[in-house]
Length: 208
Image 1 (cartoon, helix red, strand yellow):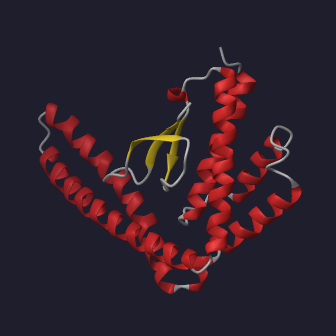
Image 2 (image 1 turned 90 degrees about the horizontal axis):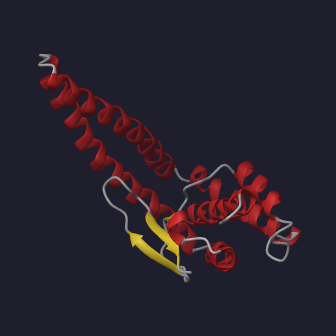
């Protein structure tokens, strides 16, 4: 039986893995939260989260976060992506509402259904296209900054290795701690599902 403190430790490690992976593709996570989790984990991962590594991590992430400021195109597609995410939620709510109204024979149900379905379809296409544009931008920029991507990948991989060992020691089932990752170039993981229309990440679990 994994204790509450042990489970919290593993969840924080998983969060840091996901955040680091997200930075590699420009999906920025609140750096203040990441630094807070690092501080909480540092007593348990002293060799990985030493002062020099944390300083380099912050410098690398600051560079990535500020990349879109250098490109009007990147800012445009980032704004479109955020808008489309909002529209997706609204259209899904409208779709579910229309289904409910159909059972009550409401005259508005069909109109809401067609409107929300149209917005949903358009949003899905725009979401996919804008995400592709954003990923292309970051892939192009990070190709010119190979050292930064390599550093983040190695950092995430070391965390995965440490997480794997701790889960083995604690006897925790991999199914109880799933990872949501955009990159699939890590070892020690079992990738369960790939990206789809409504999911832009890989679902993975530690291969214990």
